[in-house]
Length: 446
Ligand SMILES: C[S@@+](CC[C@H](N)C(=O)[O-])C[C@H]1O[C@@H](n2cnc3c(N)ncnc32)[C@H](O)[C@@H]1O
Image 1: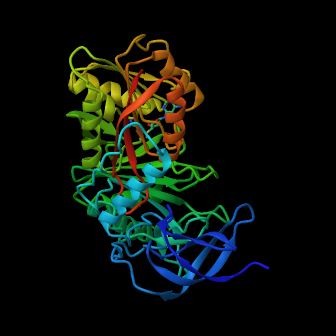
Image 2 (image 1 turned 45 degrees about the horizontal axis):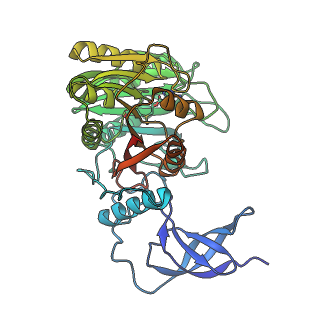
């Protein structure tokens, strides 16, 4: 018979913000709202059928509260799933993130540097994403799904987004109610407004209303006209999405401009880049700029350096390398981002050639013997093809910018087989309140 009650002393914190402790006869127990060092009697909600692991909630707290426990900033904390570490004081978050990297990568030839803290702990996000729905009383809600459910939590009042984003989201809710635009219902697949995206740059705001192809345009225009009175609004677009796979903006979707411009101007290494609603951009602008500057230093970019930037996005890294004097070839799979990067580099007169393609089978125009390659893949890390490309390019210096410590560890092992050894490993915090951590690794070929 499985036990449903036990005592847990949490030793660490998982990505979802649960304290994790070992219990004899059960294994690893993940307890909601229990911090490392705290003990509680818990009730088990679920035993994993595959591993000695269970999930639980606190029935009764035992012993002292952790000195690192702090009041979460957001009203939706604990339900929206967005910033699951907000109840842990920031210095302790930083220590836990660094420990996460250390645990993933294990023994390395160089010590792991101290983690670089974010200059802002709240209000740092330049983009808010909201699912539209209704509450029990029938009022419009903009929020997020409780993890692993379709229960919507109202996220207005979120303190992680820039304050103007939260303000505009509140306006959107009012305008949607006023215009009688029905939120989409996932269960019945009826309704008009699916998501709202609010992006901010330099105090300017772009709103994307993600609707269905059947949504009456007149109602969407009424929402846009009501929002137009907000002084920060620079553009409103409507994007059709009839898909059922959870994609918020389907790749290749076109944005219909309802008001102003369909993009915001963002500055990357002094170059002005047009950013639409869907393009990838690091959400913490100030800390991303610090990280890009450090990448350029680690890459030793200077006049004469030939560099390749793989997984380039809008060019945050490539433009910094070029600003330092390097000649850069950037590869990115998103064609729209490539077009924007080309335009930005031309306007700023920076030597960046932006190529659309897959890093696993890139276009022919790559330089044959670059001095440095920078890779910044999505969380799953490098594919076998991308690893093979790095080996073929055979740079003396490789800078790996990772948002996934576990995939980084796997890729470092694969790169060691190709005789690349780390000589600097530096974690950066770009997302306070979450378990996320970026790691910069410089490797040299032996
Ligand atoms: C973590 S983001 C980094 C973007 C950019 N370096 C930055 O700092 O903003 C990863 C980028 O890789 C792109 N990407 C994903 N898969 C790719 C692939 N197979 N080949 C090339 N680019 C890819 C994504 O579109 C995204 O822009």
